[in-house]
Length: 390
Image 1 (cartoon, rainbow, N blue to C red):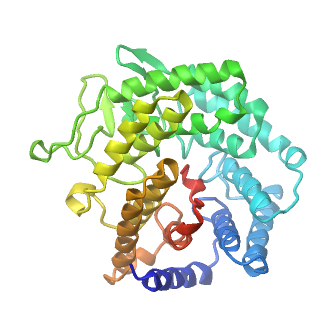
Image 2 (image 1 turned 180 degrees about the vertical axis):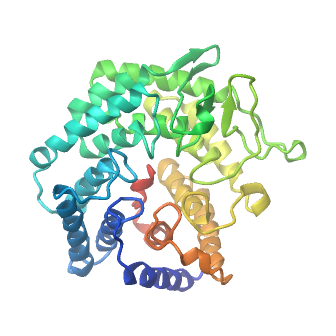
């Protein structure tokens, strides 16, 4: 593929991103997201580069100033729009930009607030990865807060509901999950929650590791009970349904292929769970399913009709790169290349609406440029999409 074609798209997006100022403080649609973006640009640049580093720090300082003066637009404790996103950004910039912040001292009050908020959300069955307790769990993992992680993990796992097929988790943040429905996605469902639980494993004590392993094993048994091989003649283009209605056992194996929903989230979960459980069969199943998803490329089979990260081409490009890093299988790089070209091609169709949301990470240009940046630096074998749980 012509790398310059992709680089030109990055540059045009970058101009749009940087020419407008955001008055929103959030991570996924405001100044914290911009701070994260400029930190990534510094990370992949020469050591002497200072412009993006300075911009990233300036943006973080603006958010902190409004936060401490009670003028912040951050919304409660959430990861995407609230205090967990602030904590995540501070930790990430401290590491990438070598800010020498005393995290233990500076974030102790924030951590206490976020822990109490997470417990509250768990009691309400809001286990959402983006907008609930799952996102706070992710912050504590990135922060490396051993105390709160070992307190939160058993509380979250205790919300698992056992049935004949295994354990499933409800997420009341999503309207569709309130009526006894299991969401299997990475964005709002079980794949995402289990991935975040596994990410916390290095910080857990032996008792909680045992609890985690048993919960992951039973949850995967539940997910696998809904596996069916793909059969296009029978209109089954996915191995797993996106949502299972446990009231009437209704579900569909026709769904999008994207970051937010679809088989890739479950495949990534199987790779990570296979390593946690030392289960080679689970990893082999992930290999077989993952490679088969590469054959899904047209809009009818994938539902991809835009360039963005959440349910567009950019997210697929980064997802396949994550699967390559997870498995070492170079076939996944073909998926990264294909969907990166599709990402750039979408902008060539003169659809001006694609540039209307410059500061959105899930559905805007920053998310697209993170995926492009990852593609342009893929030979470094370094994922830049940690913010998306990848």
